[in-house]
Length: 448
Image (cartoon, rainbow, N blue to C red; front, top):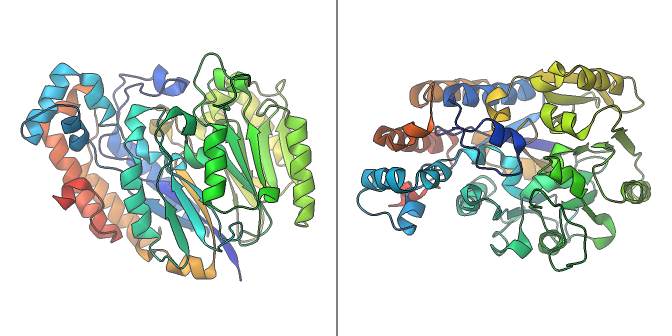
């Protein structure tokens, strides 16, 4: 039975704006209070999806979340009709209104952690929604995330959905952005690599000093249990604390994998040589070659990796079995990074092509190509069981472009968040989108 990797990209929402909400994400802080262009951001992401679909890859769409999120504003004590609630929040706590208007759900690499059926004891694909409890503006996402994923992956014969872990610091979970998988064919058993920033219960463990470690070892252990993974084919490794303190807020800012390839910085993990040695041994157990590409710090510093988002790239396998590395325009603009990427093409690995995308609206808020996508490895039967209406093709591309033109603004600033028309526009857009994708009523305003 053939295996496939489906890339699910998040659509940028109508309330996309720059507020610097993500401490530890230096691009997010740097560009706070800039004027955003939601329409351009959504179209940049859509063009990436269409280009990957045109390469012959399985490419699908995930919808944005409902924003501004009036139910949470009510929970925080704001009263009256919906427009009054928003105006009260703007006057009394504009930072709360900004948080609850964030379009951060576009970065679906944080939405869930996914384990393919080939890795799980019950032979199903497992999804665990991320609690994202380190950042208030993202901690409210997981309930809608579950509803969206249950609508797209609805057949219980093939798919198992788990609620987010307890919303406490011990179980901080940021999803697939801290999860790698190495394998042969996508439908064969692989090695799942969970990356954490700290051991919460071990007070003697090494931790970052400047920025928070958002993923805990305890959350990784819990997800591995929920997904019924084989312990001998599962690894828990610690991200280097110095990397976190340099702005590497998720593992996908300093490492990316695809099948037999692991592309990572010299300082990605603690005890990195041991980690790579273990991976080599486990890949030999499943009769697979292993291609680690370790970028020396003298070639690319962590600072350069963060500013260019070199490792927040996608490595995808084409139909001819060659691999393409997909990078943001910022990687091409950095001479040292671009030189190294071209050197990778000459190495003895399956990567033989580079493709560049302009994702500046997402990049300015701290998210590159890999942040915008979630990978789901499937076999033929599982692929057929996914809601077919979310897959990118020419017809859906045209529909979504028209949809964006109809509902999205060309400019959005913090002061615009209190505009009562923005709520109406956003809800009308999402209501129409659920009809286009045929996912039912997944938003709270649709269930009133």
